[in-house]
Length: 175
Image (cartoon, rainbow, N blue to C red):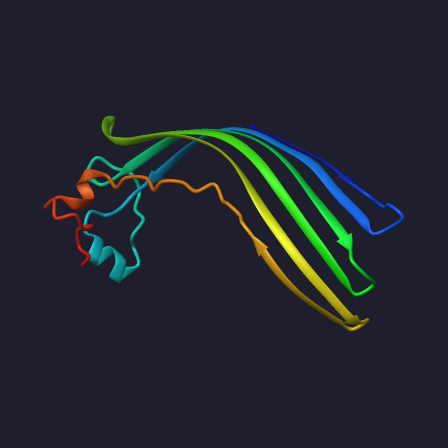
């Protein structure tokens, strides 16, 4: 389930000053089952191209991850542009965001729990941008821009313990 909404107010004023104001909201709840099957010999499987095989009682490396994820994010943003003259324009902007995210992954191998993954993250911050643009003629635009940004990252799912049977920290069959 996902709900996303954005409202934006963009000016068309007479004069040198223009603005953009906005609010962004998203609320996401998801649940996923992700089965993975190997034939038990990673090197042979990768070389033969037969990496995926059906689930069976003789396939000890069959593995399923069940995921539950939630994300709620609210952001307010604004931008001001000022036309210094017909060729030069300055723009400054800011975005204030707040998000809460939770993820729960539980691994199963024929009904036995493998180490799962739980993470919960929340962050609030304000990021900024500035832009100076110069238009010497109708065919040319020169500009310099500085901007901060962010992306909601994520953690990687853990490998099932059966993929590192000798416990050397490497996926078995790889270097």
